[in-house]
Length: 68
Image (cartoon, rainbow, N blue to C red; front, side):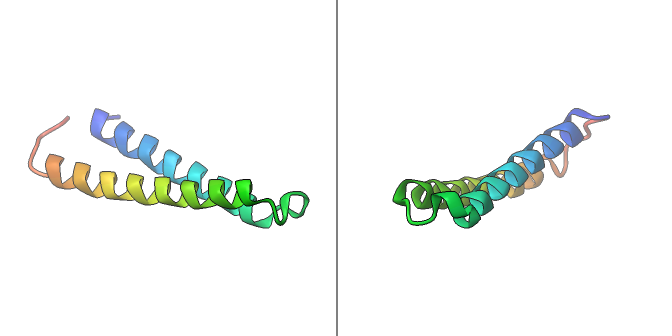
């Protein structure tokens, strides 16, 4: 497994965890109406979008590199 592939897996895991947390913040009935969870959900979505942007940047940056 190459370092580039491992890096992509870790970024994908971070995106997945952020989106799962955001989903939980918006759908858990025990925290309905609590603005702290709404803000945390929005922050998690923004973090996931930032990670997607970083993944795109990383793939463009390493496209021409030969990383075993």
